[in-house]
Amino acid sequence: MQEEIERVMDVVRKHHKLYENALPLIASENITSNTVRILLASDLSHRYAEGDVGNRFYQGCKYIDDIEERTIRYAKELFEAEHVNVKPTSGVNANIAALFALTSPRDKMMALSVPEGGHISYSRYSVPAIRDLRLEKLPFDPKEMNIDVDKMMKEIKEKKPKLILLGSSLFLFPLPLQEAKDAADEVGARIVYDASHVLGLIAGKKFQDPLREGADVVTSSTHKTFPGPQGAIILCGNSLSEGIDKAVFPGTVSNHHLHHVAGLAVTLMEMKHFGAEYASQILSNAKALAQSLYEDGFDVLCEHKGFTESHQIAVDVRGYGGGDAVAKKLEKANIITNKNMLSFDKTPKEPSGIRLGVQELTRIGMKESEMREIASFIRRVVIEEEDEDKIKEDLIELRKGFQHAQYCFDGKDAYKFPENLSF
Ligand SMILES: Cc1ncc(COP(=O)(O)O)c(C=O)c1O
Image 1 (tube, protein in one colour):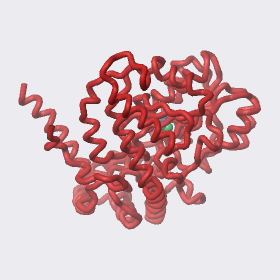
Image 2 (cartoon, rainbow, N blue to C red):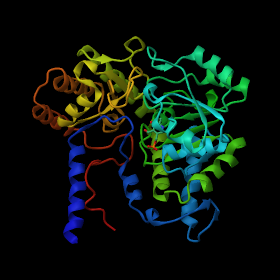
Image 3 (tube, rainbow, N blue to C red):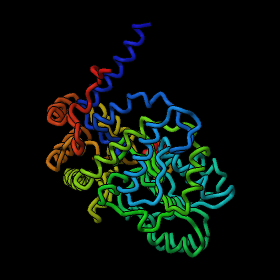
Image 4 (cartoon, rainbow, N blue to C red):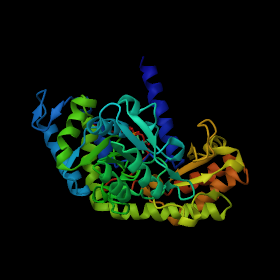
């Protein structure tokens, strides 16, 4: 038995080693500070606290109340929100709760389709199906990699949806939220803005501010550009607070993840202190990586718009065998990316692109010059078809100088397996 347990531990150690020696470029991930890692291993991970601050179903929650109250207070301050709910356990959970609160079965909802950037949870197999909503596609302009504003306004007025879900997993540019709000107001629609990818940029005030631009509700994961523990948050005005809170508990969550709430409190403080600097470096790094890849011969989308205004860039790799083949080839050199559908793709089985996100490499201190080196690693794998093992050696050398999380108070050895977590 002990052997089996050791085997599990060993596999996780190997996983740590892989990431210590890799270039993690998945746009939906990040690493937390060490304080957050410790909190995630605390007794809070064992407990239940159904209910709300000061009104729990179980005893033993006085410190949990303190933590949740603080986390809500810090989030209200950072995002200038009247109301905050920190209980959803993931971004999809937050979206389900928001739709549960704001729609009734058979209502019409508009969202981006998956090939055009919509998250899989917006598809007819996911959240809209759970609520039995009629789903309409938001019109997309592939050249601009954004919603087609004129068509969107016309279609909102014609189709009269009850809800517009504005958000994207291929989120290169701010979405036309103010225009959507103008059209939504004419037909009495509500807007949910899914900030999952860009919450850290919003916290650093380097992206659009959805609550000020007209979103009724903001849903978001807390672990992509916002470098917190896995989980989610919902922000809204006081007028919707009761409905949102009920849709979260008891609607779609029984016990929320208390250790993650404590970790979120700490990350909110980190972002209050370092958020502007971190977000600003993410944007510069994304542009630098895109520019270098473009100069190296890659078809990086949206050159005419400066490639990106977020942490992400999208590359059309049809000329090199498509997204799946390229992502797998890059993995052999420890460059971790994902295949991604582009707007013209007909099937998820043959995605034409790869998506790259620089938020984690920025978190460990990389700057524009490292982005240029990374572009050259990618070029050597994909265009020059050099031996992946040789490139891996070179990038491991580069990674030696970047093992600590920055933009926090305690990021030492961020990828180390916690052998010595002492109790
Ligand atoms: C736009 C968007 N919304 C929601 C989610 C889901 O978040 P989670 O994985 O926290 O459920 C994602 C995941 O990447 C996303 O891209």
